[in-house]
Every structure is written in structure tokens, then in C-alpha cells.
Image: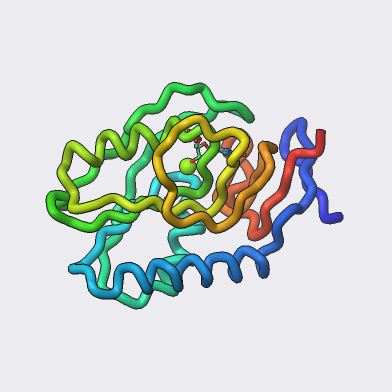
Length: 179
Ligand code: IMP
Ligand code: MG
């Protein structure tokens, strides 16, 4: 197994880039189907983790759309702080629009709940959620997640945008923490 060491921790590859790209194409097909008749949907990508997922997914989106970015942070080290802060707001008009939130991963759902709560106040026509990865065993909220790339166990992972203390975001594959 391909392994990598970041600071004090060792990780083993759990999802390679070829598999990642297959999953993303399938996700894009579903979104293309559902949004082809909608008026200029707006993708909202949640930074930092979603930057790779967003770039790869958007290359397969075939309808006219806009893309904007929102920055939040809830993780410190390898566990969620439960304390979500909005760091960079949105300038685009949201009212009456079809919004698709792009997340790298939904873990407890605390971040997602805050995003959806904040966005609803801006009165979009509707909000759909697309996440590349989902940890069903960690999820504590009941917001519906419309598009899920892959469900994974409740382990800490890095790579493909996801970090351990800022490191590992550049990796093309996804790695799981070796306990
Ligand atoms: P939640 O609020 O607990 O759902 O956490 C959501 C955010 O925490 C994600 O958007 C990620 O940025 C980060 N996160 C969750 N799980 C992991 C992980 O396993 N590795 C790295 N970051 C993670
Ligand atoms: Mg994130």
C-alpha cells in the first residue's frame, strides 16, 4: 500500500485518483440532468477543502452556470472543533436562484447546517447539496444531501483538497490515517 507521513502521522492510500475521477464524472452527470433547464445555477464551493473537487467537477458541467467561493473553518488537527465561522462572504445575488453547495466532505454536518442556515436568509429559489465524500456514521444533522460521491467510514482522511494541519491538500489520491 502507498503510504505517506505528515508530521507525526502515517497515512495509507484509500482512494486513488482514477477512482476519484470516475466518481466525479458520475456526480456531474446527475447534476447536469437535474439542472439542464434551470436559469444560470450558482455553485458555491466551500474553501479550502473543496478546491480540487470543485475544479474537477466543474469541467464536466455542461450548462451555463456561475461559481463563487465561501470560506469557513471548523477543524483543528484531526477532530472538529464544533465551532464554525464564516470567514469570507458572498457578493453574488442569491435571491431567487438555484444554488448548489459543493463540499469536499460532510462529517458531523455542523458546517453544512451553518452554511444552509446562512444561505436560506438570502432567499434562494432552492439549495442543493453536493459532497464528494460523506461519513454517514459521523453525521448528526438531518439536512438532505442531494449528491454524494462516496460514503466512507468514520476515519480521518487527507489528500485531494483535505488536510492534516494544513498539509496534504496537494495529493491527487486520498489517504486514511493508519491507527
Ligand atoms: P463537519 O462540520 O464536521 O461536517 O466537518 C466538515 C469539514 O471538516 C469539511 O468540510 C472538511 O473541511 C473538514 N473535515 C471533515 N472530515 C475530515 C477528514 O477526515 N479529514 C480532513 N478534513 C475533514
Ligand atoms: Mg470543507
